[in-house]
Image (cartoon, rainbow, N blue to C red; front, top):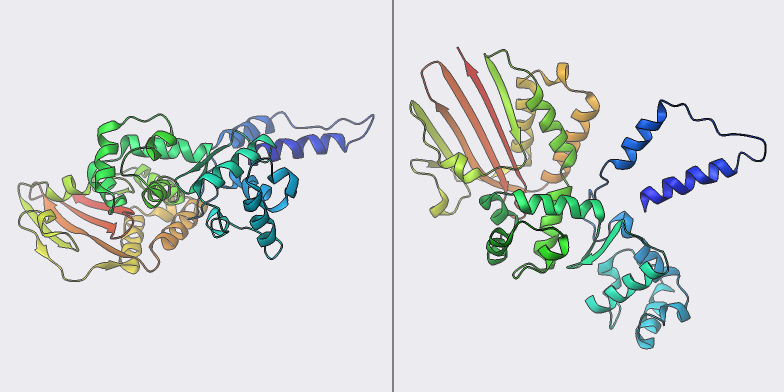
Length: 343
């Protein structure tokens, strides 16, 4: 709906010009407008309704009794109308607190909202307790089709069977297929959505760090999605020091020492900042990308705890690599930095 809103605004501005006037748009602005329209608009906070789907809530809050009664049983409509008279609905979870409103009734509300043009194709609909946009769906499908085994199991810590089923059934074409996979429910589907959409500013910062050219003497790599197990368990010829924390005993790489304390947000942030500074990020990366990425990292790590490993390795006596791996112990949000130097 955000795209449609922009289009309607443009039309209203043209109408406002009145007879005998012509809205002038510089030719060079057209490509920029087209790029803005094509850019993905993702859900960036842990809400249960994408902005493109907010018409579902608007329909529940504003439709008349008789209109709601076309799509819902009368007793459900009565409960909805009585409740919204007190306070408007702000989420699907809020709607679900109304007596007799469950997943089936939410889908009926979605159907009414779509029929009455409160939502359109930009809203895919309600899947496993959250309403996702078309761009959310694209990101979710891309993530599930490409994510490594170890990361997916961390994203779905309480749905390991679901993770296995996703790995065995991919590639997927739609988010509905993912939601319908055995072992995937409300919590796990939201975890997948969050992993796919919530860290895009941080990922943009990581892309910028990785793009800083190296002179062959030092460099840094930062990753948001990666196979931490393969990285942590790799063996190196000359030096291979590993310290891990928070891992299950069966997941500890051979020869690693164990640190008793988990990592906190401050440690993760400091390591990302170190990688940024290591490549002289302020000289190569725009302040906008830097500030948005670090703010996103702060939001995603605040109050969280992380398992992981710190690895120092040398493949020869003339170079050294240092790897920091951090994985949120609850939702699988993961960050990796690798810095290196060579003589």
